[in-house]
Length: 67
Image 1 (cartoon, rainbow, N blue to C red):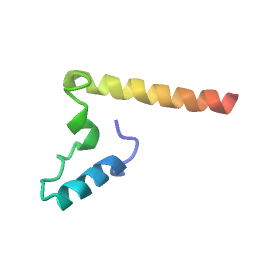
Image 2: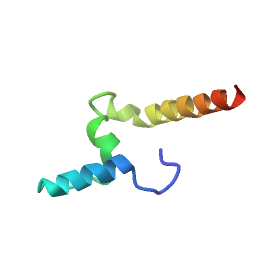
Image 3: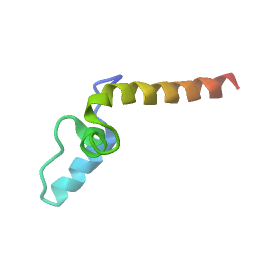
């Protein structure tokens, strides 16, 4: 779930390292999809995981702001 079209900094860093090692770049889905989907959580649940993570992050920022 992308809030903007900006490239993920982790994907950029990974691609830079891969380029230096002579390996191909990550696919267009990026770092998180490459290393986490299908390993940490099932690929079919990726949208739900993104929503939960975004909710936790926004909730923590709101909780901090109210404090």
